[in-house]
Image 1: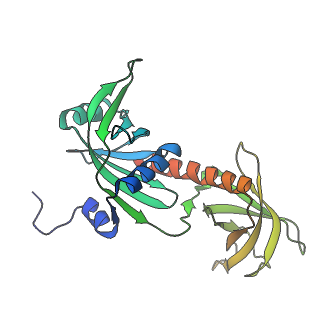
Image 2 (image 1 turned 90 degrees about the horizontal axis):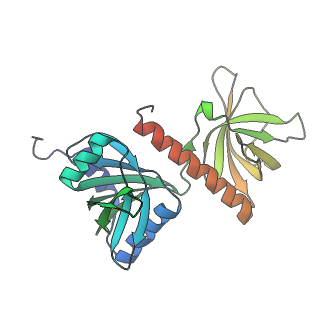
Image 3 (image 1 turned 120 degrees about the horizontal axis):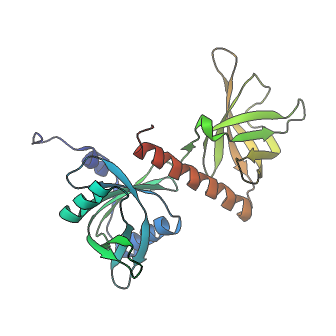
Length: 249
């Protein structure tokens, strides 16, 4: 038994988070998660292991949500026995968590899912105004900077948000804070490049002189480009959660 006065990791998280208890706000947050197909990290009561799921439906009229079946037989059996799940997720720079009492249900095609009442409370923590998602080196996302004074610069991204990027150049460069570079290109694996103007906000060479870290802010994004960047950030968030679930980070 835990000592009195000690907080679990979940309680420590919740002590820092805003407590959302108004039903319209709760439904709005849940619909945001559902529409973005945000990957959920789920813990079954009685187990410290985290599994993955998706929010399949939010029925505000009948007051329930549907969660996808856990893809682990032991976890599914434990969920059926305890009837309780703890859900965590990250969407658009916001961390959310809630508890739910579930029952096992099946659709006409025989697929299994969990039905639960709409949670009465969601714990909501805003990480930052523009949450930056980490980009793994193996994800191979590059930023091409067309600088007039020298050849195009090829920078490797290490994070990205709806508002800007952090990147690494394999050389010293003459970039300076406040410089606006038009028509920069985000080259994405198996996707069309995204073109945007960029304002340099941060430049710092490392101690070896072999790399330069830069930070940039997107400028003048039209709705189409903003949507493309949102899609990239969402995909990276999902991949980050998958890796955490697999214990790779």
